[in-house]
Length: 208
Image 1 (tube, rainbow, N blue to C red):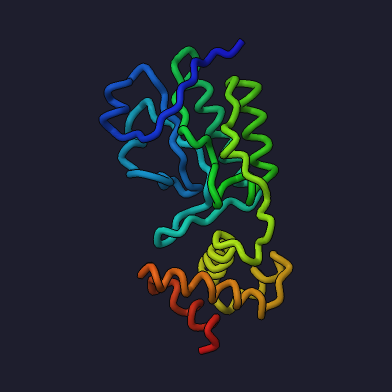
Image 2 (image 1 turned 120 degrees about the vertical axis):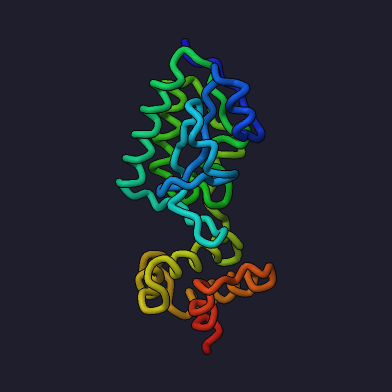
């Protein structure tokens, strides 16, 4: 029998945390300690527990995990902390689950996602919502999230001069990688979210 009484929440902030001290709220984090949705001030509350599910956030662009051992170890450490903190208390989980969405674990880090779901089920008695258990993209060549993933990886991996490593990782030709980056760059430009970090990659993809 589970030691945890689990309820979902839609939003959380400092006021909610302080009004419910007897409850522990799970907060999605990045590998480098940023809150994925909301403000970092919630982490100062003793009944907030962060679980890393993204690598980082660069200029509002989420960089997904890539099934690396260091990412998995950090996640497992956070789950151990959560187990100790929440034992005997009500546990509040995000309504969408943990690590959901187009930059989520199921798509980009299936090994980590499997371990997460197994630990939640066996130790916490918690089943991830069906929406959180995403399947692989049926056609990554036309998927918007995939374009942005590749664009972001080129940005944070050393820029144009290291783009060939991103292409090799995803088994793409350089020409195909340029096409993906061009699509992502155009969308960012249209949304007025094309920042200085992005410009060299966008210009390269445009052949400038």
